[in-house]
Length: 153
Image (cartoon, rainbow, N blue to C red):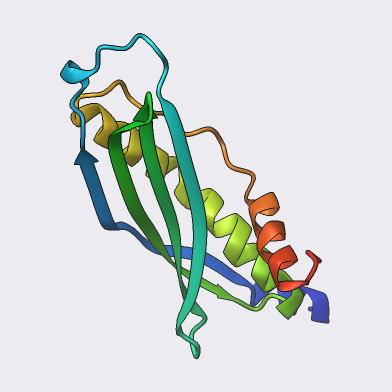
């Protein structure tokens, strides 16, 4: 077995768990009190946070944090805050790839579930479902690196 084959066999990338760590929905202005035909302004912010929970075994907690505020005519309709997290086992990869795996691939795996939770929470709050647009996590990661003065490998 070649050295490259041994290296590839030792690479591990698994999702161990995924869960809603925190969810808050505040219905400030119920839909029944909205008299305007205008479309609401939706401000959606998405952030990724990574923490190493078990260094010896390469276990990382990746949190997809979604903050949404909907307004109509400068009046808040609802506020939604979601922290959807996953526990990942990631090891055997070159150090220069770890950032991309943790900040791009892991959130990409979590996003469809977080998107569904947002849609359901908004709908159950009395509003039409809100479907988040797909997120380019590579761009989001690059923005984080730019803020630190680094570049994506």
